[in-house]
Image (tube, rainbow, N blue to C red; front, side, top):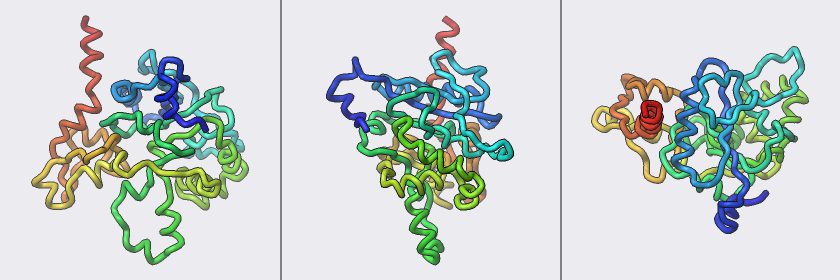
Length: 282
């Protein structure tokens, strides 16, 4: 793998653009989620890059979003479950795309510089899933399960070289029923195969934080303190509930967890909306 930090040494002018990828399918997310994510990348990444959305509906996407169909997964015709679409990005040939790619889910907010995600040494790098959630002591009762779950990567933010891990997709296509019986979600399947290959590593835990577990004060403290941005955080991830749209709209609280003012989050998520509106009015 060509280490992305070579960009610093060779100069950005002649560097091959990096790839920033996202996926949108179905009705869960609208075009504004893609456009705002792109704006966040533009504000926080100085390296040359292409912003690419894989989607079944490109309506409403801004012109500088490159659009491709959803990743191809050659599943048997009788296998209709498409929830694991994301692992199609690990195919040997994804629409001819080459180079280093950073994948970002649509339910996250960029709050800091993104260059370190390309400079960090490693092959495939993911969030350590357990870094987003509070400790679950009962897992100690099943050491084998705990040992694997502590090593599962969360695929909300991951980096890879396009085409370098086609064997993983091959393994899924060979027997998707078996894969989905052994692993609850696709990131567990991905993590298992990447760990067996010895190519999985994890982002520094401070970079990607859970809104619910690391920004919102716990229990009664949440009634006296608003959510805050932890030191050194670069991306806020909405793992589980509440959902990002709920929080931005002023909701998402529960009786045991108040969600107060989140002006800093709204500013980061909608900052470019005002610039777009201004350019349209001029």
